Length: 291
Image (cartoon, rainbow, N blue to C red):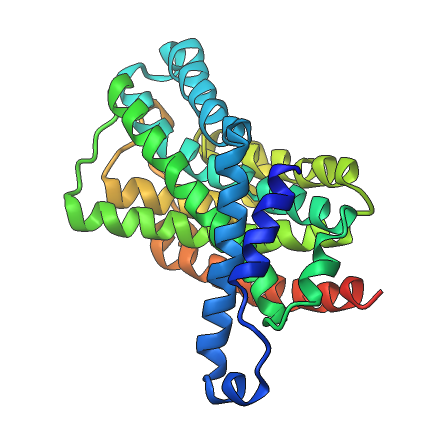
């Protein structure tokens, strides 16, 4: 029996037994939260039993840190650039980790696990919510690993504990929003192989046409405008502001409405993504789950 089947078996045993009278007496939000927690538990069990799934979430961001910090960093500002860099790596990593949701849902669809979950007396929203919540836990782990690595390369939190908590809150809100985009991508993909590619085709340009690694001021006209309004730029700039990590002097000072209101704009971007992606993902889930 595969680890996925074992984990699903534990979910089926943990799922509430069908008792209409009892179920109706439980408030809907409580039922959704309970069912989402069960699905999230199943997804985390799968990761624990297949630790290689964590390689992308931990090793890849470390590679980016050392690559940019020591190969490109020397020509971009040295130690000051490394402080500037980490917020961009944080944002890039949680955006790329949406691939966990994309591939996970595509895999569940392909193997018929979604069909098995439909037979359980559980909220339909819980299947997607459980997936995105479990991937949020993976993002917390990724951030913890990168913070440790950041201190090794000279990055520091200069804004105090409360502002640091706010910065990580902004990053994790964005991570949760991107997980729902990943869920939608996984549900519209006809196979796991297509899902793996589809999740990265749009992610790379979105990440690199931003101020995650360089100043948007250095980009040519149209690309600079895209970068200034890019949600990844907003989350990165908000994190830098809250961590109080400044850019190297050669990068100049960002200006314009998105830069001046980066914290609020980052939160609004994440909420808008959620408001768009969640209903679309739920609509698509109902369609594929009804086949």
